[in-house]
Structure formats: C-alpha cells, structure tokens
Length: 308
Image 1 (cartoon, rainbow, N blue to C red):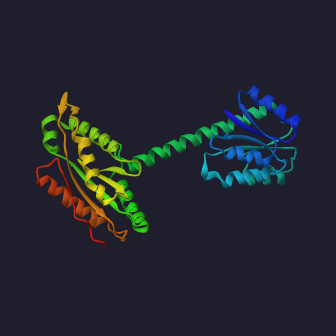
Image 2: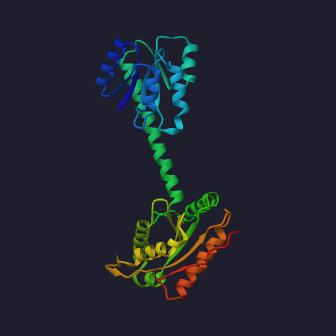
Image 3: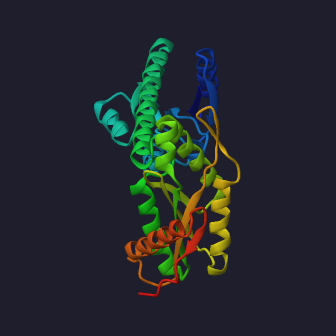
C-alpha cells in the first residue's frame, strides 16, 4: 500500500522512510506541505499519510484542513500527525484540523506500525461502505434483469434532457419500443426464454445508441430510448437503426433460434417547455400503437409536437 511521508528534515525523512519500507509500504515523499497536498489530491494519490506538524509552505494542520476541504473529490485519506509537541492543547488542535491520529516523535516502530494498521482497517471499512452504497444506488436505478436504467431512472433522464433542450434550443427524441408477440413467445417457450430474449434485446439496444443517449426498461417488454439533440431529419434513420439492431439476427434461446422484432413509436419535441414530458410520452405511445396496427416490426414517428 502507498503511504505519503511529509517531512522537511532530511535525516528524519530518511530514517522514517526506511522504517516504512521495512513494514512493506510503498513510500511517497514530500519535503513541504504544499507538495504533500498536491500528492494527496492527485487521482492515484496515497490514502494513508504521515505528516510532520512543522513544514514549509503548509504546516501539518493547514495541510489537514486543505485535504479535508477536498474530501468529496476523492476517497478518504487517513492522516497521522507527527510532532514533538505533547501538551493536550496541541493534540486537540491537530485532531480538530482534520488529523485522524497523533504520534509524538520519536515514536517506537511497534507503535507506529500498530497505528498504521488501524488506519488501514478504517480505510478498508470505508471501501466496503462505498462499495455497498454504490451497489444500493445501482439497484435503485437499474433493472435487475436487463441491467438497463429502470423506469424511474429513464424518465428522470428524459425529464433532464427536456430541461437542457429547452434551455439550449435543442430537440429531444423519445423512442418507445415494444417486443412483438412477446406474450406468445412466453407462453410457447416459457418465461426463461422470455427473460433471455429481453436480456438480448436490451444488449442490442445498448449497442444501437450513442454515448449521450440513454436506454431504459419502461415496463414488461417495453423499452424507452432518449436521444437528446437529435436532428429532426435524422429521426427516421435513428429509429430504423434501432429496429434493425433487434431484428437483424435471431435470438438464441430455448435451445434454438427465435425471430424477434420490435415495433417502434417515436416523438420529438423542439419547444421550450421543459415540462412537456408527459404529452411527449403520450405521442410516442400513440405512434407505437399505430406501428403495431400497421403489422408490427416497423417504425412510426409522430407529427412534430407543437411548441407549448
């Protein structure tokens, strides 16, 4: 594990570096507080630090305060302050500046190693908490079967896209897709086959969109695609690309190849009302209904929605 050693006195720095290397740490050195702050703020900077109280540029407490101010920008840094000061007022000042622990110089190697192990345990715990939070956040915004945005997340993305489009005078395209004859597929081949079809359709839709677009499972066998800034002249081409991405190759499921197609309904909005999501969804849904009525496996684009 990497550890930052911030110490301006050369002999003390060399001796402490050797001790830390004997403990198995990869030691990164800083000769002043400003350099230490830059290292700790870098993308791959150490998350464990030993900093001297008295240093040029920034002293230990100032360094701690600066690191804590940037805390939201990166993972937590565990800081142990090194000093020859021993009175309680100094201990309190060091800890209140943002240090996690405090060691009086010269410190015994065994005590130093024990304090560092405590820091590592705390960092490991923080890592587990961050991972658990990310997993909870992912589950709250993604569909468990397909891994796509869930209904709430894709609608939130659509709403924000409309807001940006209204402010930047750029259109927003909604594409509503429905797997054709999905109930028959489920009834004939079973729900595992149906799930496999939905997973593969989701994967293909994901490859059919671009970086700034978003795909979500709208419900059941329906998917919603949000394409911000789509030029009106490109709407039919983008929708046709999406339809073809699903229909191009049979889906392998239930021990064989299943022909899967989608009906596609689309609606585009170029107005300035950022609350137009609900009527835009209604237009896309009506276009999807017409696509199904026209024989499925086709696209229907609603008339340009009038500016509200």
